[in-house]
Length: 228
Image (cartoon, rainbow, N blue to C red; front, side, top):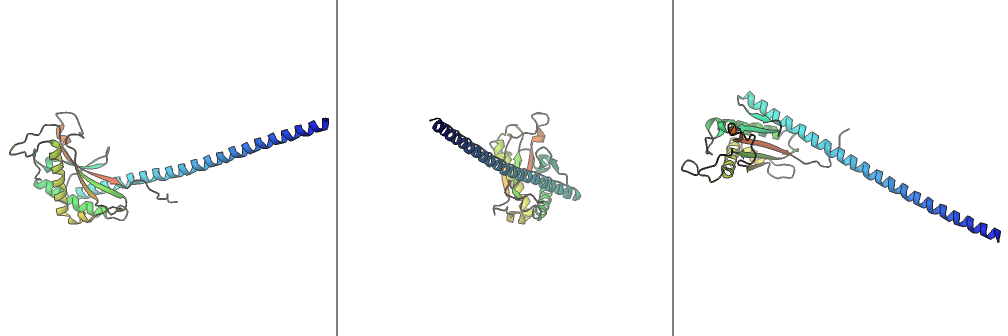
């Protein structure tokens, strides 16, 4: 009887030990899966971070190159380094409530179009740009429709100015209309923001808000591998 009890006890302890070994194996397997999943996530995150950083560097290079080329041709153009956009002041482009571009504005925008085409078609840039926005902005002063001003709102005014800026640009450099991104979509787009995106809320400095911005949007992060 004693021997029998001893054997039963040994068998029970052996089964219990096997159960704990199985649980340990399961936990170890889950831990390995977690580590592998985390590693893949980190690598993917690193690649996307790299691509974002690369896109920002390329954008800054493009804008700085355009600015330098414009200055060499005698035109003053600004870069907003907070938003990284090219900026044209309205005083160069349009009269108050006007949408017909001034002579200096036409010369500036025409020259800008030619320089942008040469930059955007460079091998190091042409596959990285998703869209180029021509953006119109106004101040917060109300628009009063009259014989001199044929608009009911700043939104309409800013949009028409952006459209006319693009028209002057591609008439000076028709090849801009042929530019496509990697998805074969047209590169240029036009938008009007009216008073909704002011640079300053100061009424005395409201002229700063009247402007045309050229904003470059880069291709979103993809599965591009980090070079060794």
